Structure formats: C-alpha cells, structure tokens
Length: 274
Ligand code: 4AZ
Image (cartoon, rainbow, N blue to C red; front, side, top):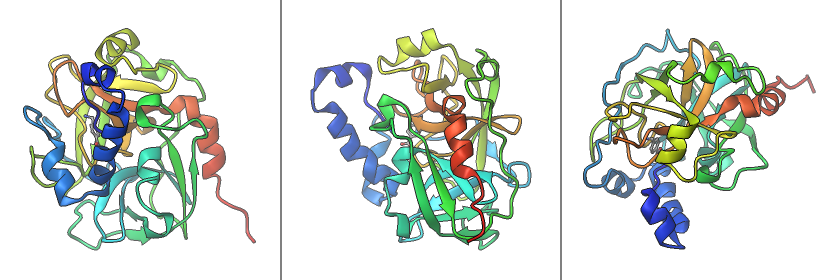
C-alpha cells in the first residue's frame, strides 16, 4: 500500500482515510488507481529487478479479483494455504478471490487457479501503517507447488541488518504504466530498525521490517503487496507499504513474518478429512 510522506501523515488528521481511499482502488487494480498511484517524481517500478523464474520460486503466487485482474501477490505456506497482506485479503470479497499458482507469465494459462474457502486476518490488523498486515487464505483443493519455509517465532537472526533479501512480484514496472506480465525479483538489503524509524514515524519493529537502498532505486511497488520477501526459501517479509516506490530514504516496509509465525503455522495446517 502506498502511504504519503511523514509530513503529510502528521499534517492532516484525515491522512490515513485519504491514504485508504487511494490504496483500496490501487490494490483492486483499476485503471484510475494505476494512473494516479505513482505520483510525480516516483519511480514506480521494481527498479533493478529482473524477470524471475517460477521454477526457482514456486511458492510465489498472485491473487486475482472478479474481473480476473491481478491485484496482489501471495506466497504458498502449505499444501492448502497462502499468506498475503491483510490489506490484500480485505480488498476483494472472499468469493471473488482466486489464487494463481505456478504461472510465471500472467498471459498464459499455466499452473492452477484455486478459490478461497477461508480467510484469517491477524486480530491486530487495522491498517498497514499500524502493522500486523498479514492474512492466511485457505484454498479450495490442493496447491501443487512447494511452499516457502517460515522463520521460527521471534527469530531475530534472519533480520540482521544488511542481509540481502529477495522480493518477488507481478507489480508495476513503469511509472504510470502497466503491471508486469512476468514474475520479477529484486535484491534488497534489510534496513536497521533505527534507520527505518527515521524514515517512517509509523515504523514498528515488532510488526514490520524495512528493506531497500539508502539512495532508493530498487523496491517493490503497487501490485507487489502481499508478495514474499525471502532469504533463501525462508519467508521473512510480506510486501506491505511504502511512500511511493524506490525513493531515496523511503525503503519498502514489509510485515515481519517471524512475529506471526505461530499464527501462520496454525492457520496453514492442512485441514483434516471431513
Ligand atoms: C502497493 O501499493 C505498494 N515501495 C507496495 C509496495 C510499496 C509501495 C506500495 C513499497 O502495493
């Protein structure tokens, strides 16, 4: 989700409402939101990203809405469940969400398309900027692709500052332009809590983690929300929000998955027969 700068967040009391009003259509993937989302001066693309192979990242999936439009990313966490951002899970009615797995190029019919039978959203979630931006979708049927590994609950080692992580998604690749047809990936270093706190007053080190370069240039962007930030095959983050994309001093903000590892594990456990 896109957020305004620190100054405007503090400035207008209605800023969060205004942000929500902008963000919902953005994740819903409407043309109007796409043309307005980037904003002047933003480099709204995964700059420095490359086309990626689904074979290398089989857990990377995306979500489509009633119109078949990709509106968010997600990540396989078990044979029956995907994790995504809470703001993605709430953007589209459950009966309209489809999980598309095993499809590198959106224009093909590769892989599988599954409906959603159940949505769990963190009880602590209200808004991405308040943290806990995580949800687990239970799919109808079985996912035929390998899940990502979850970090241990409250693992801090995997969040060491400077660790190179990989963000994956089908989000925007050009300022004001279309989303990527192909899966793309980018390498981004994890940012320290103190640096991220100075970049975002809303930063909460329990529920969030930041990644990106001080000078910007490489980042997740609109449409990448809900998708994975991995180190190796371990899911350490979920794309949550940022002030634009790839701007200097505004790294991407991700949900800190280790904080929610127990909940995600419980919610992704394959249901018993019956
Ligand atoms: C979004 O709106 C979004 N640069 C995702 C990631 C970032 C910004 C916005 C981080 O889906």
